[in-house]
Length: 105
Image (cartoon, rainbow, N blue to C red):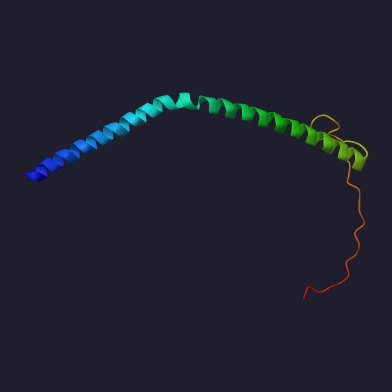
């Protein structure tokens, strides 16, 4: 019976294929972390560097904002940080010119 031999061969082929897939998965599953450890360290280093750069830029932004406020309003006014937080300096008033009646057609 030829069909019986074909089914046997197909079954063994599928079993060997599944076993090979499983073995490959286990091999790569256990060895992959060792291979990628260098990349993970590099990623941590990059994240640390970016966080430091972000903190530096935030500080620089606050300093520039304070200088601009001093230049525009004459004195710094804080934002709830204990540095003159009670003083509210109004922005300079700019006269608004009257708008003549006009048509948007």
